[in-house]
Image 1 (spheres, rainbow, N blue to C red):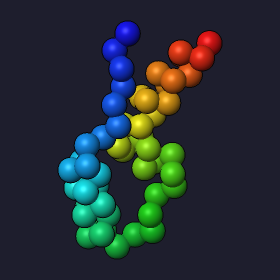
Image 2 (tube, helix red, strand yellow):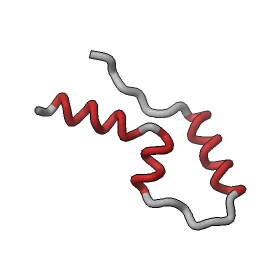
Image 3 (spheres, one colour):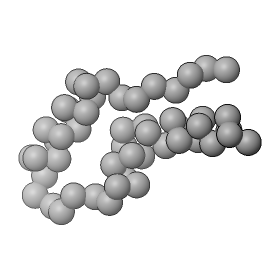
Image 4 (cartoon, helix red, strand yellow):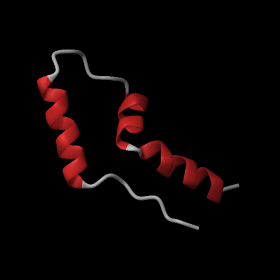
Length: 50
């Protein structure tokens, strides 16, 4: 089975920089996870625990 990875530090920094330039409220936590690809990690963990 292929192991899922968290986004790189550089990817997170780029995301945070992008968020700073936008003048809107921050998205909810689920949207942040989706944008960074963390839902893939959660899905992989859930499959392992079944």
